[in-house]
Length: 169
Image (cartoon, rainbow, N blue to C red):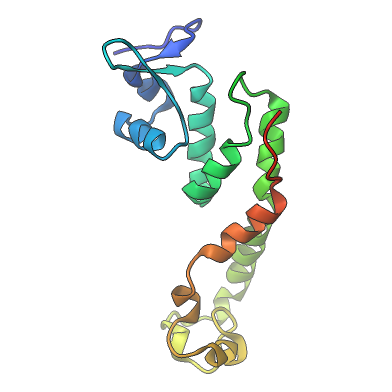
């Protein structure tokens, strides 16, 4: 068992994996996707700065909230790279998707409240459904499951509007 010392400034991939609870393969994936960075030793081994633990925790929490990796990457890009992010930095970037989360919460609450009217039949073809297609409004957009065919991009739009595209100071 490899344990990260409390005063360590850097961590190996194994130490970061153990401390964060994230598999080494996931850490390498996050790095390929530009979510975290490392330096390489003369032996080509990865070394992560200690503040990467916070970034990994932020990534995992964001994923659990259903936020796409592309959006997480954009928001992490607002953090300073020359210093450890402060509480204020984290609070600022957390605001970037507050409105998106509020919209998701309202949608889930509406789903919960309207569930008693749903018969669970795959109601994409029904004329009227309080959950999926009230008054068959989506028929005007064409045949089939319109919300599924149109893709998930709408959820990201609110985050992009709420999040300032300026570089972190």
